[in-house]
Length: 268
Image: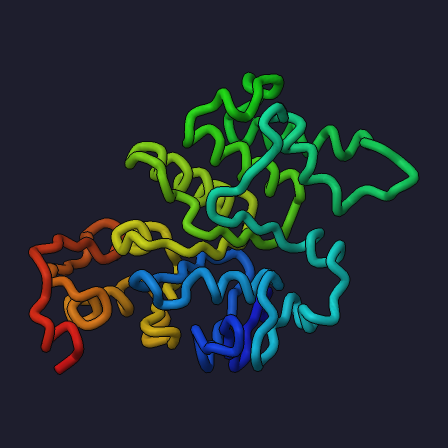
């Protein structure tokens, strides 16, 4: 059974459709990347999958349960969500932020339990932030702050983690640092990851499967080697590129040569 599934979703704002007929499933233990050009509906789809946007039509299921009919705390025990550019109070420490991840597991009549403290400590260790626990979040670098938000999600102990462009505003080394951390949590602990990315090469390197969106519709889905091709890059992203399979990883590698001609980019 899929861990997360969308059936015939139509999504929009103010009655104006942004994405239509979206069908996808997320398998336990995989890294699924939602990829597409700007304005293709990637973040909108992720918002619907996380119950942050009510579909115009269609249903999202979490572990077989209709997301609309599932209690919010129950959802938070299974799913963690990191939006783009999350915000926190300016004076919060790293440990205080990560401790917020334990909220779905707590009851109003008790405070922090030993299990909560254990999970917070574990999350800080996994993200390499244990030595920064007492530091203000604002004192960290961009990459360190993103790891702190991921630590919050790990402390939540979810089955699945949804992230909206987790590498935005980071330099290349910190982008790779974040993606390697997510890949390691997937490999070592079986964490299912769904993330929106805008960088094709990163999706090719880290995703088990890619869902490719164009103008609010899924135009391809499958392993990177089946989705990322010279034709796809030309017609969906409007660029001319060379694509080949790496001999070691069997994943596509690409070299962008320039912009595609408009007729080619439109599929004409």
